[in-house]
Length: 485
Image (cartoon, rainbow, N blue to C red):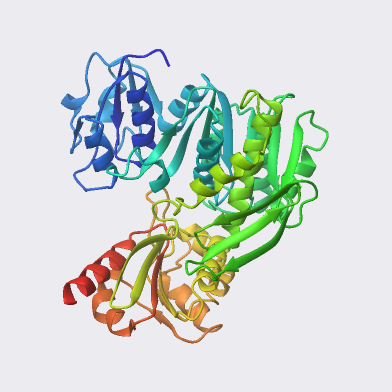
């Protein structure tokens, strides 16, 4: 992007802030606007001295901008700045299209999948840093391991050089079709975004279209444990690019073996080996799904070094490399809202997670249960979107089995859909309580202090999950409990 002055409408969004950071780092004059609600991105923007308004007014839009980038959440109908921007003659791009344009200046590496792509992308950054791979990385969450220094907070970007650019790309409405990746990591394919994808088959078709964009000299790195990913790989089996499988059921050097949750060192750790390497890898965040995410990162790093000049003059992996990987994975604590530890007070550990699809919910709770054996899990879950809840109602009702106590809230709606199904949070509650005891319906998470707080005991884990805003309940209860000590 040979641009000088860029304005962001919705600059506090995770992806928007991350792209603003990259463009600012590249020498662009960046500014923007958003609401006055405080986000963690406020601190990032302020630390970078990127100015932004905390309201939307047409006069905020600079008339001499070279480019205006807007969040996909905004349209000319709901944002006066975007409405005005479209009359100025200045080029206007949606975030995903702007990110795609940015990626064209690099050897682009895409991480995609219905879930797991944020953590997998973050772990790619962790491995790249350990292995001195020249790359920029952009994730959909703030990652503490990406902090520029111990004094600065988590970031959504990591800048290690300019040869490669790795970013997560989203399947919703086919947004990722704007990109042209040389290598794609595919974590999984399941039915989701039911407001746009009417069936699982339509999801498979969209991912297949995207994977087919890989050039003949590129590669697909896919999870062989996931039926959807395997099906996409099967559909492109005759394509000329390389297909590299990873996982517990994979064949070849990225087959995962001897995976355990080890508690012998005082701090719980996931440990595993890969078929092709004489090393025990470690990760200090819960869930076997994160072993898969880390293995995807290892597979991508190996592929870059062994086939695309990712590091000149050295093989993958040396003993020095293993030591560097161990040092970096020891620092990795996930991303914001990805099994994020909020704190501990009164003997209760507070964790927040973005999981909003039954598969992700089930694997995350199970991983936490294994990571913290003997601790009771008290879950607060807020469903997201009417269409997803209605379509996957049975799957949702079955995914909480490893939680000890479950509080279900009303559905967090999306502005892009109307409730045409008549479904509600109470519908999910009624379905879930048929299958498990100790399930409760608490429509508003603001009632948590009155209803949930008395339930919490020393030794418990209070876990907030979902793509809604019930994370506020975790922060509120933690603050109250700290104040009471």
